[in-house]
Length: 53
Image (cartoon, rainbow, N blue to C red; front, side, top):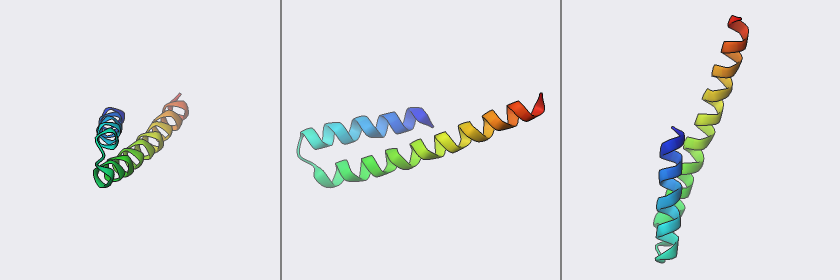
C-alpha cells in the first residue's frame, strides 16, 4: 500500500513538472488516500500485535 502511494506521488511530481495540473492533482489525492489507508492498517496491525502478547 505504501509502495503505491509513493508511485502515485512520483507520478504527481512528474506531471506537475511537465505542466499537467489536473493529472498531478488527481495523483496527489490518490497518493494521500492510499497513505492514510496504510497508516490506519498499520496502527490496527500494531495494536492487534500488542494485544496478542
